[in-house]
Length: 225
Image 1 (cartoon, helix red, strand yellow):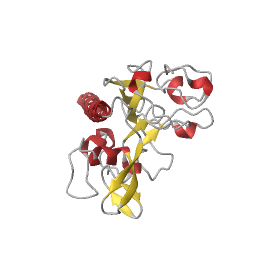
Image 2 (cartoon, rainbow, N blue to C red; image 1 turned 120 degrees about the vertical axis):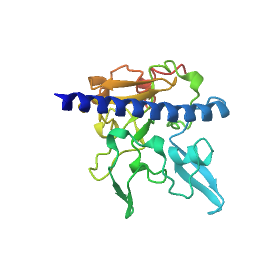
Image 3 (cartoon, rainbow, N blue to C red; image 1 turned 60 degrees about the vertical axis):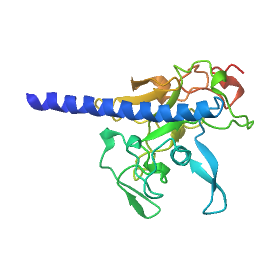
């Protein structure tokens, strides 16, 4: 009789820890946005590398670390606790012939969380969006549990709504019997969201601020301009 109760308690604790991780990461992103005049935190960014004497493309985890929003580790392959969903603890990833037991800022496929690349990237017109242009910050996802289509890869560093391919949606549901996904929103709060059509189906006519439509004319629902 105790085993089901203990299992539920462990799952609840992991869900809470995961939500706290996501709140922390969203806080770091918010700090970045405040420092850069409310420009939404980018999923990728070119950063100057003294070692290479050139600009190097970095994914968002590396951006947070290089800009001193994350604590720096002892080397380039620093392990970051906040990138690890407790429900996935212990999983391994092989990328570029290197085994990663935990999420690693230099291996975006090892991230357990991904950014919503609709608000967090440069648009097709190369206009970087501002937080002030977003209509529904409390309803627009910022980061969430993600997975990779490749079974050998734990996660994915970004996700997005795309009417042409469900491959891009890539939300993961590792909580409460594999039926809930943790999501941190642009305004900073985080919730456990259950599986439902708006998170699973590609529908270009769907008006849903969760994704922050942007890519085509019929997806301007979430933006002031």
